Length: 420
Ligand code: GTP
Ligand code: MG
Image (cartoon, rainbow, N blue to C red; front, side, top):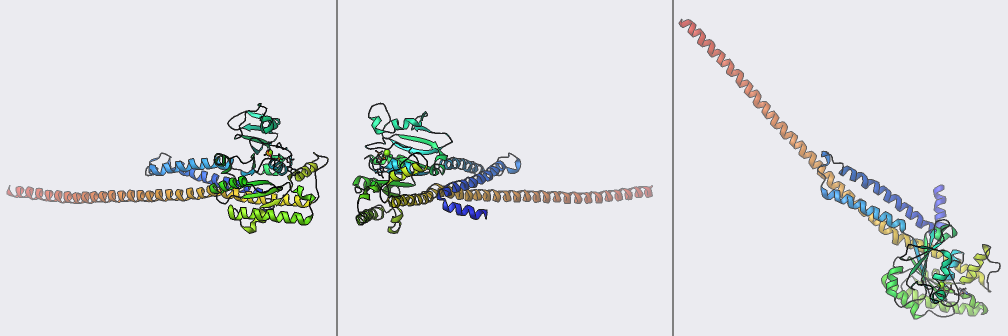
């Protein structure tokens, strides 16, 4: 029953599957580490009994130990990673804040986020910033100054637009941070794609393109993803048509028409150009939302805001945002398990096979050694028996000789006696 309820809760909470997989992987590698350590102790015990174990096999076991400890360190650092893109002011920071249920990242009109911002879960009360390449930790209150393009222009900030600021925030403050999701907020699409695709995107499990529903997908946005797709086959991409609240002034027919028009374009892009998903999957990849409405509603629910911004038709946009989050959580955990742990799982299998071969070799050598010792013993035994046989023959011959001498002496004595 307990395992059944664990299975059910895992199904309801896809993000937990990643932590589950990570814990399972930890157990596998701990077991493996124990086995390899036993083997190494046996090979290295220095007694004459193990003299026959070849150096090659001993060295191989040392290599297993090294790779096991490297992999253990690696997966302890592994997290699920999502990168957000889109032109400036489309609402990337607002989407992230809405997903975190709090106004953590600076958001505003004009060009706001100036660097790469990476939000990561830290320990309790850990609210600080870390700038790439520097060990100093700054208070979170500096975020608006450092990560904000407006203050950067006053000359007080020396952070380059390519630098990465890690925002460490208590895990307990959000479901995403608690479950080891790392969120990267990137300012618009710089033309130097390759260097930062290599630097920040190759290990991303999911990309979220935040569009402005009032305009169409630009060539710059398309080009960026086409470059990503060249480096990562079939990248997992979500498209958020943000600011969909702007459509509330239109009548329902018109909204539906625009929605279908956008949907058709995005399908062509995701399915035909990017080859990121099938036409059937598109409905779970493209959403029409208002990040501002969702964020403000969530802040209101937490008692941080008296009145939340809301336009007509907000319920459907909110449902779409929730739907996006559900699909996002499913896809990111699936992708992260596949990309992060499948390789470790494969390596564990390889180590087990190699270790089995190593043991088979040594077992063969051990039986050869046993055979050699047995033959040695048999040979010695044969030689010993031969010696014994020779000795008994010699003894026999000696006795006969003695007998003969005695008889001869006796004959001689009695002849002498008779002669006399
Ligand atoms: P940069 O950091 O400059 O690249 O911008 P960004 O993409 O991070 O945009 P940001 O989240 O800062 O949002 C820009 C402005 O748009 C802010 O004033 C937000 O409050 C507002 N905004 C974001 N999402 C929505 C939305 O869905 N509807 C409306 N009406 N406003 C929004
Ligand atoms: Mg921003």
